[in-house]
Image 1 (cartoon, rainbow, N blue to C red):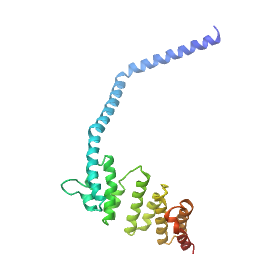
Image 2: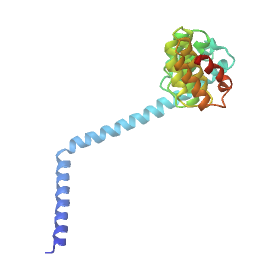
Image 3: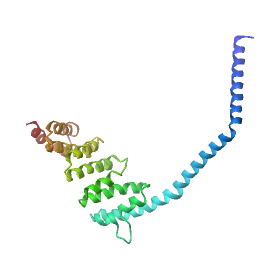
Image 4: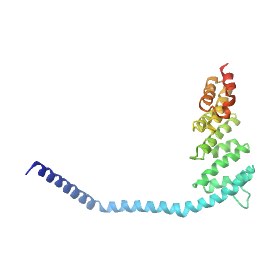
Length: 225
């Protein structure tokens, strides 16, 4: 028998051995395998049922409530937008509580925080703003930056800086220079001119067309004295 034929024969024997071993394994653990497959199927069905029969209808309800609350928010009626009118809609705060697992419930957390900020309740604002988890760079960076504003208004300037820098790090040509400048001013108030200079220089070099860059040389000169 040639080596080529012997090799092929050996390969066939290996395959047959592997198949026999697999069959033996399946036969031995058939019950456990069936239980495992059944469990996976049940989990998938439960997940689909939860989504289709719970989350989707609640998302629709949450969107309807959000629409009503946003109409008052746009009119600067922040207290009504936050708490509802007691008759026609429940307000952002209750939407967070009732529909927290939905996309609208997540967005309502941000709106709740903004309302509290506008009403001067900065600790409550931070509480709800920190619950928001978004993908939109513009809105998310604004929410993060607003937490920095809250800490400034609470007199905790040192805490504000990390939020301003995080908002700026999202690299948005409109938002980033705003929060770089706020971070720089916060550093200045803490008597850290070198750190402030770093923020101002980044505005000048990275965002020269931004409105914040129009007078940034004045800020740079002030910290270089």
